[in-house]
Image (tube, rainbow over all chains, first blue to last red; front, side, top):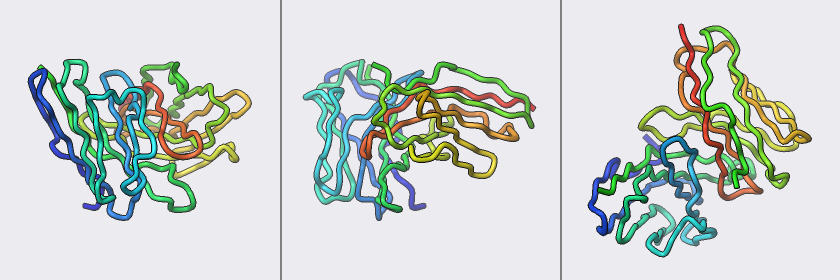
Length: 116
Length: 111
């Protein structure tokens, strides 16, 4: 399977703990995106990378959130001092400039975070 | 500030009939639009897209229409099948980079 993979699929943590999620994009895709989705809403953009460079961060990405893509391949999203409001599905997507456009993004299955 | 809106949270259609899902946007800088389908506990799956230089794109049973003057797009599914039952999201891209999603429309196709 050469799709986007995310680990873990589910994470339950206590308020105040730190959590880290991993995303492995489709191998030839050089752009990688993080989104967050809460119940009844569409995915909301958090940040994206082109290779190892972080090109844009949303206002949603507070100081407690940090994302890295150190070698331009997999990426990690860390949330420090988790709060109950961080409970959501965290989605990763990747894209390549096939056909001259990065527009079509392919999503992984997501990591469901529950903060107790 | 909801730049992409799907005003119908749900839609129910009989198998074999046409499903029409609608989406409105506010930002005229959006130049690419996409539809994604999502099943529970899975990530969104890309379905079909359209560039702002076109007004129609077709792929099998799926057709997307874009009306730039009205800032409106729609997804037509003909004929609808029970396996099409899912949540459908429209998304817009402001010249590459991030996607901005609507709230989703849950489609139920009844046999």
